[in-house]
Image 1 (cartoon, one colour):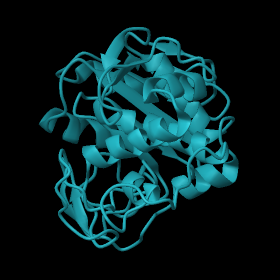
Image 2 (cartoon, rainbow, N blue to C red):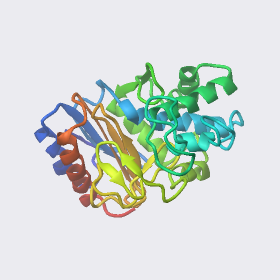
Image 3 (cartoon, helix red, strand yellow):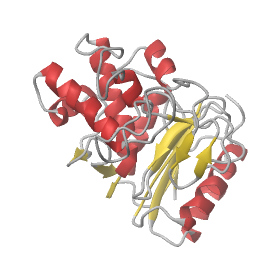
Image 4 (cartoon, rainbow, N blue to C red):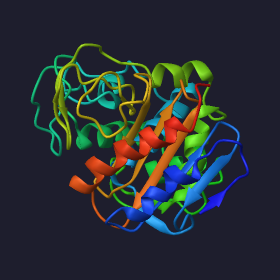
Amino acid sequence: MRVDGHQLILSDALDTVAGWPVAAAVGVRDAARVLATTGPDGQAFRWASVTKMLTATAVLVAVEEGIVDLDAPAGPPGSTLRHLLAHASGLSRDSDRVQAPPATRRVYSNRGIEVAAEALEAAAGMTFGEYLRAGVLEPLGMSATVLEGSPAAGASGPLRDLLRFGGELMAPTLLSPATLAAATSVAFPDLDGVLPGFGHQSPNDWGLGFEIRSHKSPHWTGAANSPSTFGHFGLSGAFLWVDPAAGVACAGVAAEDFGPWAAAAWPALADAVLSACPPA
C-alpha cells in the first residue's frame, strides 16, 4: 500500500483489495493528485471497454478542433456521431445490423464506437490510433498505454495511466469544461436498455462515451455513489469512475475478467472509498 499523506483515511478501504480472489491494482485520486494506491500500479493490464472513454475523449478533442461535428450523419440512416457515442444509434453490439431506430433504445454497441472512430479517421486523414496518441495519450503523459485493435476495447496500460486519465476527467486540460460536462451528462434521456453484466435498466442513462450512474440498480458502483457519477468498466476487470459530488475518482485493473467477483467487490469498494471522503 502507498498512501500520499492526504488526511483522508483510505488505507482501510484499499486494504480490502487484498481479499479479492484476483490479482489487482486499485487507486483513488482527487483532481490534484493520487491519494492512495494498492497493487502493482506500473504493470500493464487490459482495459477492454474502458477504452471507450479514451475513444470518446479523442472524438471530443476532434470536435473542439473542428475536425468532426457531433451532429453530422454517421452510422445507420438517421444516426449521428452523437448517437454513436451515446449507444443510441441502434447498431447492434458487434455488427452493422440495426436493432432499433436512432434515439429509441439504448443498444450497447462496440460497433457504434468503432464507426465513430472510423469517422474521425476519415476526417482527420490519419489512423485513429495516431490521433489518439497525439491528441490524448501523449498530452496526458499516458506513455505506457497502447491501443491494439478495436477503439471500443483494445487499450491496455497500467493503473498509473488510468489514474492520469481520471484526473483529466476531473479537471480537464484537453477539453473545455463545458464539453466535458455535456459528455458526462445524459444524452438522449429516458432510453431503456441493457447494461452489460447488470441487466435491463430503465432508464439506461449514458453520456457521450461515458456511462452515467443515475439511479441504476444493480450497478457496478456503490450505493453511496451520487447519481452524477460517470465512468466505465471493462470485461477485462478494469474500471474507472468519477464521482463529482465527492470530488474523487477510483480506478482498478485486474488479472481476471469481470465476473461475480467484480459485481460484489466493486460496489463494496466504492462505498468504502466514499465513506472516507467527505463531499467535495
